[in-house]
Image (cartoon, rainbow, N blue to C red):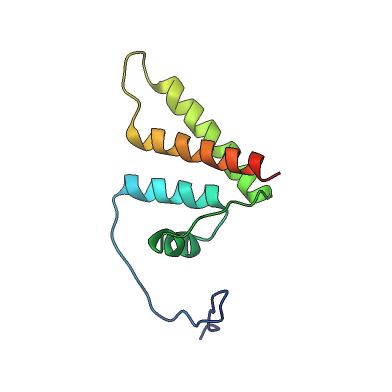
Length: 107
């Protein structure tokens, strides 16, 4: 049996919430979680409660930013001239921009 998990306020998290998403939605969620530096659980809970997500720069976040920027560059190079940029890619670019601006302003 695993140890009881408690949140930052000492509450025991013993309820499970599950839902289905498409592979594309899962990829976007995973990307946003990586860029936030939070656990997936904490990220989803904060988003559902409409709480602000503050990204604290650390090696994990910097690595995620580097990897995501590499993926964005590859995808943009793959897109032919005149083609529309997919909305999911624009969402990732927006989140990277917000994350980097927030990290710059926080210094």
